[in-house]
Length: 130
Image (cartoon, rainbow, N blue to C red):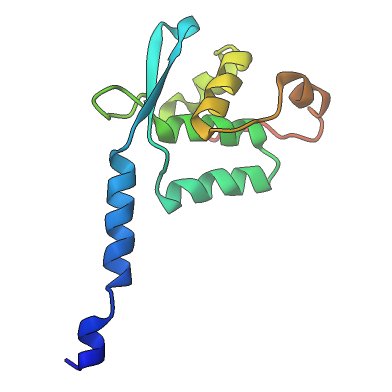
């Protein structure tokens, strides 16, 4: 091993250590309509993020928000609150205003309001391959 190799930081090891520390962090908020507290991690895997990005790219904004909730929402012990099998129920049988508020909170930023989604209904595709 050369002297140069010994002194170089192991960037990949540092990157994975950083990620492992981030996925241990959890925040939470109360959803009174659901009588529950949702815990969530600020990061997910790149594979999970790519699902959301692909849906958003296809103008499936609402579905992307639901997938974000499925990927990030946790119980206090860190276990997933929802599974991919819950997607159709979240899309079709849950108050959309609450779903949007939960997605906004989990994403840490502003998302389209329900009125905006309704106005652009013809432009936004909502599908579920459940």
